[in-house]
Amino acid sequence: MLSDRELLRRLIAFNSVSARGDVEIANFVADYLDAAGCRVIRHEYADGARVNLIAARGPDAPGGLGLSGHLDVVPAEEPDWNSDPFTLTERGDRLVARGSADMKGFVALAINRIANAPDDLAKPLTLILTADEEIGTVGAQRVAADWRPEWPRPASVIIGEPTQLRVVRMHKGHLKTRITLRGKPAHSGYPHLGDNAIVKAGRVLHALTELVEELKAERAESSSHFPECPYPALNIGLIRGGAAVNIVPETCVIDVGMRVLPGQRSTDAIERIRAAVTKAMSNDPGALKFEVTNDSPPLLCPEDNDLHKLLCQITGQRETVGVSYASDAGPLAAIGIPCVLYGPGNIEDAHRANESIEIAQLEQAGSVVDQAIAAMCMNGDR
Image 1 (cartoon, rainbow, N blue to C red):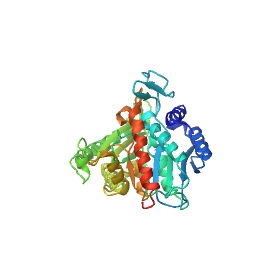
Image 2 (cartoon, rainbow, N blue to C red; image 1 turned 90 degrees about the vertical axis):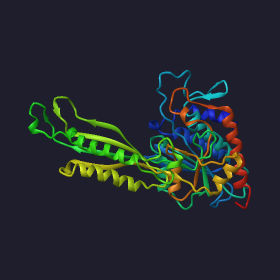
Image 3 (tube, rainbow, N blue to C red; image 1 turned 180 degrees about the vertical axis):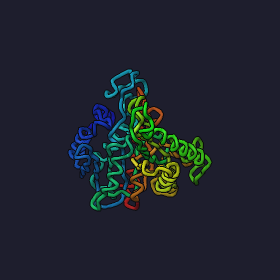
Image 4 (cartoon, rainbow, N blue to C red; image 1 turned 90 degrees about the horizontal axis):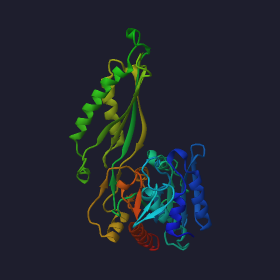
């Protein structure tokens, strides 16, 4: 088996940007775990272009601990990288590379923990690695939707997102919707022959702007854990319309995202947005198409969850921590698998040039995960 640092170096070398797919890195990890004697399940989708991996060690039974991370990364096209983004580079007390913080650092730790675990565990140790997390937790959503009774089902899961070694039991969701307005094209010199889709979009944008202001005044029970933005935030993110300045636009497409608070339901948020845009287009309903393009649900793990309590005990953390980004924890928790976020690295170092992770945090995270495995998989009482 490789050391944690060497394994991370190997993982970083795979250009697993979401758009490219994760087959190569998934094949490497599957072979690595198979050679270590783990039970490995390949869950493929998108005609085999995407691979989720589920691996287990110990009893073939439900329970025990799960470790989870995603294999994909965001693009590394920023011009101000100081080194090859797909070569792990040590710089002082940090390791620099695309995915070092988000989140191949934790993935390397997790892979080695299950690869090196003994076969005589009292409870199973499970590993869940996903594709397409960076484009909306797509891989985890597919795992959740396709979950089979024979797959190893942990009692709870550590999602190794970069939390700066804080134990996180709640995060916001990210709901994505698309609004398409249809008109009729015509020469701009003869506008009476057309029907301007962008003009229709103006009414919808006004309605969405009013909804943004409504939502700013709303609070949920979890709001106190998100002091910087304690409300469900709606963002009008993309607008695409028209073909040329001398053509009356036939279509206009508006993409809207909403950060749903823990404890809130995406279905309610969907209906709020749908109702607002439908009312705005009540005089021309046939010109409107509304669709949900992605729904990554929020996370709300109970404070008294065994894993949450254990990690807080190990780390000495007393406060509840929430984060404003979504993760694979949302889809997994939605099918009844409690999840807690805990991992090395800072989310503010991710998705930017010279992404990096502190070596000390990487090592400390490994120690904490070791203690969690000992408590949940080597102790038959849990």
